[in-house]
Length: 310
Image 1 (tube, rainbow, N blue to C red):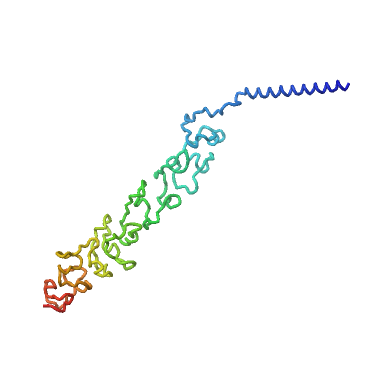
Image 2 (cartoon, rainbow, N blue to C red):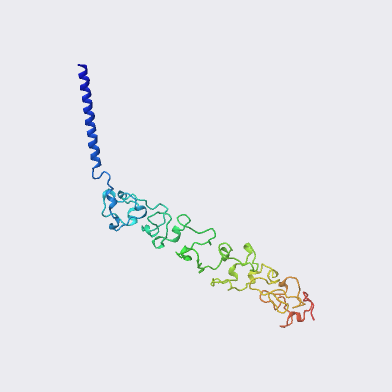
């Protein structure tokens, strides 16, 4: 009887194993021949260009549901702001808080490949004044050597380049040296005559025009304004711009040589004899001097001593 029981149990076990194998085989065959078992996703063969919106750059590899929310295909916005806008149903990157003020036409500056760098800035898309963006935070602002001004950028610059700016001097009548200091704008030429320093400096506008701004050459010497400087600081050699040194044959703006005028003092303060209007006559002729237009040296033959005359 024991042998019969063991044989019965063995037979039952074999039957169960065969049934399990058959079931597993049926499952594998069913999966293998299922229509969509290894088929490519349906959207892989869809030509998105037929919708009028070509998928390029970062858009190309996005899952459909990134843009088509809730399986809604028709009516999906095609403009950048429709998806990349605050409050949009599409969870796409929107403008950061520090983005410049602009319209929603992202493509005017950006490409579908990446936000940065912006390949081309279209100022026609910008809103607000220049300084709204060009404040050193949102976009490039004034450099450390920029002239001191509260004017808007477009008063001098164009939207094409910072270079080639033309400063509008209209209304500027003083304080030239505030900008023309050799750092913010061109200052004194190396051969400019001394004008003093600090508060004692002769201002540019004392000699240069406040209405003609295309050249420094339109200038008239203003000696009263330069009275703080000694005559000799300029008129010893006259080697400054706009001045003419004296030669042995012609008088210029400097002390004449002994060959040109043997009786002229070789030292001393010019103002003892000359005024700030002309060097040809003395400004120190006394009130009781005889009326004459003759040169001083015709009578005063002792250099530097006009008390002696003949």
